[in-house]
Amino acid sequence: MTDNQPDSVLRHRPFLLFWFARVAAAVGYQMLAVGIGWQLYELTGNPFDLGLIGLAQFIPAIALVLVVGPVSDRYDRRRVLVACQAIEAVAALSLLVALATGAIGRELILGIAFLMGIARAFELTVMQILVPGLVPLPLVPRAVAGSATANQAATIAGPALGGFLYAAGPAVVYATSLALFVLAGVLVALIRMERAPPAREPFTLKVFLAGFSFIRHNRIVLGAISLDLFAVLLGAVTALLPVFARDVFAAGPWALGLLRAAPAVGALAMAIALTRWSFENHAGRIMFAAVAAYGISTIVFALSGSFIIALAALVVLGASDMVSVVIRMTLVQLATPDTVRGRVTAVNGLFIGTSNQLGEFRAGAMAAWLGAVPAALIGGIGTLVIVVLWMRLFPQLARVERLEGVKS
Image (cartoon, rainbow, N blue to C red; front, side, top):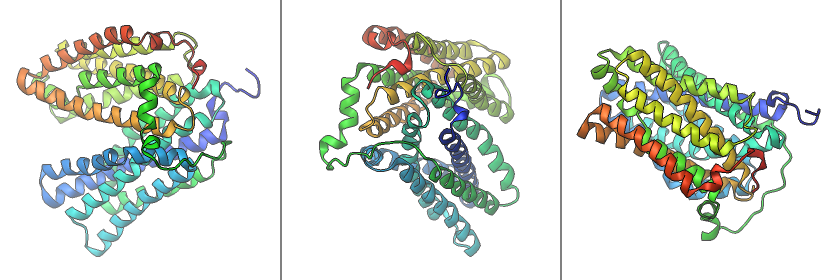
């Protein structure tokens, strides 16, 4: 390695600022989600309202998918990100004011959730497409993994911290979230990176649909996105964890908590490892192997009959999924021209987010019909079938060697 290409992403100030900004924003969001969920349930006592929070955030993600990409490609992405974090700060501040004035209520909380959904629709896309410009090209896979560690760490720590602080009152949670959103915005504003001014194409139907068009014509990107989509659609087991905890393992809520945490622990450990280890060769085959490991882990989980083995299987599932995610995200970023990267990333986010939700629906519906164990088992087998089929349909993806060698 030369001095111009250090072997660590931590030596790059833009990436460090970005990493801490992502941790702050993600922890703030997770804490706010815990706070509004708990407070809404205290106010209404209706579990259906908790589902409405998710729906209120899902609607903007779907409605804005054709807007997020063009905005991310036309405007300074750092400014878009700062604007998102400003909206999130306003949401937290609104909750604080409502608490102080006694105006807190069901409709207000759902409205805040909708506002957060708008900000998150832009934020999640921009967070991904900023990464390639923060480090030299050979370090992009490690930077993607490093960015994933920030998100995974926040997913684990954020809810726990939010629950702990809620004991002192919801105002403490909202005030802490507000501070974290402001901090994230300041850190992003401090990032300096070289980037040509974005092209300001007129808003036409062709511009809006450019992301879909690019994915359809690029076999590597299409293969990577669709492989992950169908693997998650078939292999998702999160919705079944309460059933396994109570009925299969005859345990209580503590078991459910451990089962839900296990994939995140595996994913975080693998993401940390990938910040130091790059895919020097056979990146495409490694991606297929990781998805196959995801399917095998699902099968082991379904058939284990042992709580400890099930936990271990979920840890491996999370780790293998992280390998697939890092390769897919890196491929999408590096194989996509910067002029359409925002639109392609927005479409990718829509597909993956939808597959997660439909995957949980698939698991729940099949479990109601056949039982939880057969539902998980069939999902794991289906994932392995997808791997074999996709290797034949997308040989270009299997032949990818070095990620940084993929050309846009």
